[in-house]
Image (cartoon, rainbow, N blue to C red; front, side):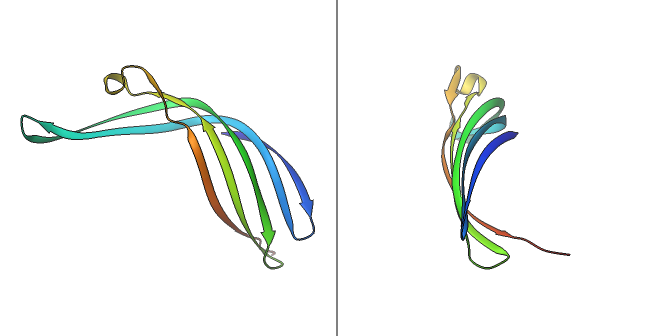
Amino acid sequence: NGNARVFYEFSGGTLYAGGGIGMFWSDLTITGSIFGFPATRTETDMSLGQQLIAGGELAISKESRLGVEFRKVFLKANFGELTNGSVDVGGRYVALTYRRTFSF
């Protein structure tokens, strides 16, 4: 995966935005029954996708930062007979982040 980001540093924190491309692995599992017996089928897909990223961090001490990151992923996957073609499996993601730096 490769991303490019632009950073804006300010007193007490950082804002950033960017995007990139990468390989994504997706699994689809369907559970049901066949003639009354439980059945499960899983298909896996590996596809090239794109993502947009934006986030920020605030310094909570000299060594620690607390942040939030938003991602929008654009991705289609093909799970064979389970989907009869490509389906949109991208989406929006939010992550809370904590980063600590160490000096030696």
